[in-house]
Length: 175
Length: 239
Ligand code: SF4
Ligand code: FES
Image 1 (cartoon, rainbow over the protein chains, first blue to last red):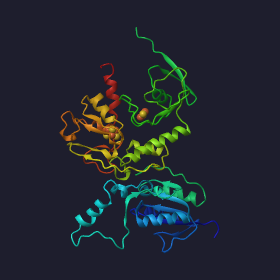
Image 2: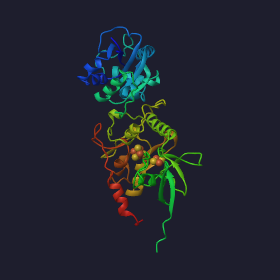
Image 3: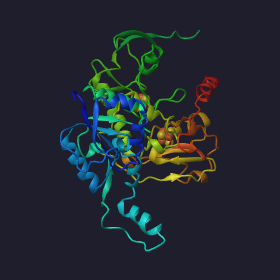
Image 4: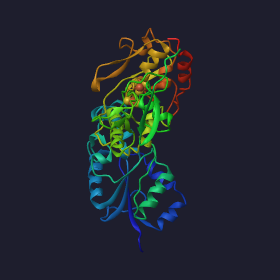
């Protein structure tokens, strides 16, 4: 296999819409697949994030301790890190909890709105960070792809540049 | 006999242009097809120089000058586009985004917003400053309109249209810095305002989703601004 790039995708605090939008590139995926191998992410079943990844697409904001741990590890093992979509780029909807604080959010979700055995979970699920942050506030980001979600056309233009080792500078509005 | 209009000549981005002495750099630039980005400026309202997006370089002047409120002068050499200006303009936009909660994807004005459109036009890829996430009120006490302070960029277009065109002066500005906000009457709920005529001009001129009509959902609030130059034109000379 000559010249296939290693691509990973990561899903942090987002709705999976950006991942769906990648799939919306439809038959162009076949063309892209000639030039890239998907080595990790929700699309494939690999347990460990591998080393030496050329491009990682990150969907979602950094909201929990797990997100934080994941994105730091991903950054270390990735050459070109792409913030994919408004949640990764701006914090977007997940960050709407920030003006209220994490306690108020947990209270509302797990106590006020619970009907049976109301309690705030403290085990097995990742603890929330005090503030939701866009990816670039935590690690260095190389490419920013705005949109909620970014259109399939935009994602295709970014991916087709990156698989050729070219620079991508997508232009689109937020939202 | 009318007093003759004096003409000034100057250059903008190297292009020689002629102007009336009472014109601003922005007006002359626009007349000559030179695009200078603006947010607080709106045709038909008096300029205030609030947003600083229209900053330009003038040779021999150390600081940058807002084109919308700077009069032309003979021999002026204006630079409206440079890397330095582009960087400053992006920073200004980023500060606006960081200062309040602009969540385009769920905003009533998504797709019809001046701030959102300019951010794309000026290649703002992301916000370098830490977001502030202030906790701000939404006042829906008016029968037909809503003000969401999360989306307000303090351009004062609403204040000026209400004062200069409608003549009601319901809107004004209170406090300074991060505390600054637009208010109705004596800082009371909009719905209890006695001066508001309910004309909705403020809603139509607001560049973002800060002012909207009730009942509009995400991306449904597009603004109609055609009335403004028309009204100003019709009133010219009657003041
Ligand atoms: S409410 Fe709208 S028009 Fe008024 S100052 Fe804020 S952004 Fe400008
Ligand atoms: S347009 Fe000139 S300062 Fe806002």
